[in-house]
Every structure is written in structure tokens, then in C-alpha cells.
Length: 172
Image 1: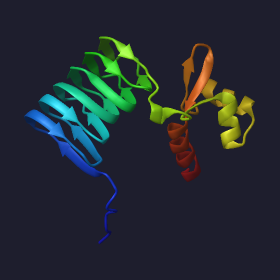
Image 2 (image 1 turned 120 degrees about the vertical axis):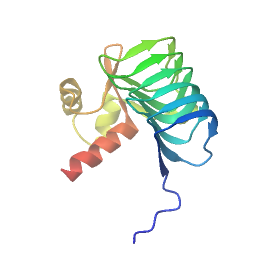
Image 3 (image 1 turned 135 degrees about the vertical axis):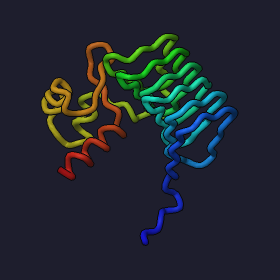
Image 4 (image 1 turned 45 degrees about the horizontal axis):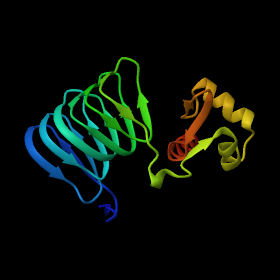
């Protein structure tokens, strides 16, 4: 039997109706598939499933939304909103990804947190980091091969997402 690393986040999959205040001091991979109302404060990753309905103020590190949320959202590292998502409330996150078809109503602030310094890279910085030509980076970004987002007319890259992409590419 394999032993779990003590520092590895716990996985918690909730498919129920709950009400109240949930606070996780240790990192967890939390997925809500049912109804939740109240306040939610998590470390680790939080996923709001496609059939979930959440009425809460949420504070999380990394968050993916596929269901319905009414309330304020603060995602410390990044927020990913899938096509099936419906959000009513204000959002604060340094990195935001929104799929076509998602519905958002409220204000959105994308503020770099102090912990994010050096995490968002320009094309030339990423080329140096990956030890490849800038032209390759731009070609990959234009074709959607590498995770990237536009800031004005310039491509930007989240170093952590690029590291995940590199690991996936190496395993192919």
C-alpha cells in the first residue's frame, strides 16, 4: 500500500447541500458538486462542479468554476472560469482565464499579489527561462500551444502554468 506524503493536499469531494462557514487551514483539493451557502476559505485548489450552486463569499488559492456562484470571489493565485459557469459577484485574482460561453456579472480586479512577483513573464523572459528562441515562444502562443494571455498587444506567461505545460509535454 502506497503511503501518502504528509504535505500532499487532501482530496475532498462534496456532493451534498451544506450551509455555514468552512475554513481549511491545510491545503486541500476541494470539489463542490452540490449546494453550498455561507463562507468558504480554502488553501489549495477549489473546484465548483457543473451542477453546483454556491451562494458564498469565497477565498481560495487556485479555483476552477463550472457551476453557479453568487458572492465575492478572491483567488490568490488564479481563477479559471469554464464555459458552463455562471457568476454573479465581484472577482479579485491576479490570473484569470474565461472560456467562451461563461457568464460573469460584477466587477473584476486583476491585481498582482506580492507573491506573484516574477511569476508573470514576457516572451523574452520566457525564452531565456526555457532556453529557446523568442520566435518559438511567440509561434507557440499564437497557435495556442503554450498557456499564455495577452496584456495589451503583448503575450504574457504564467511561469507555474508553463512549468505544468512543460511537464505534460515531456511525458508525451
